[in-house]
Amino acid sequence: MEKAEEDWDIAEAFKLYVKQHYMHEISLQDMTGQMHFSVDYLKNKTGVYPSEYRQQCTERKKALSLDHESHGDLS
Image 1 (tube, rainbow, N blue to C red):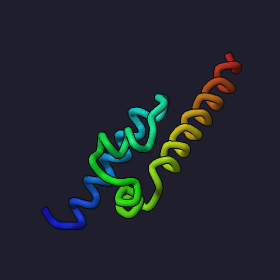
Image 2 (image 1 turned 60 degrees about the vertical axis):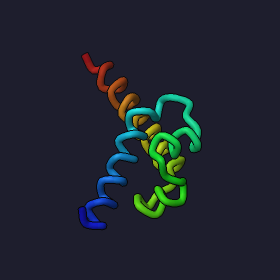
Image 3 (image 1 turned 135 degrees about the vertical axis):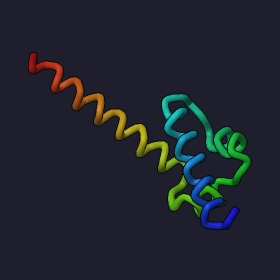
């Protein structure tokens, strides 16, 4: 496997893990332990710290939920 492909796989696995677990109280130690990588390593591979990405996912889900609720009142 080439380095660029390996980096992409790591980044995608990290993002998928966060998307699947963002709603749970999970520490960075739990996350990095499950992924078997350090916080700095994941930051280097993905361009964002795990905690920042988790916050982004939470904010996106909230925005989608609010948008869905506001459109639900149109009926």
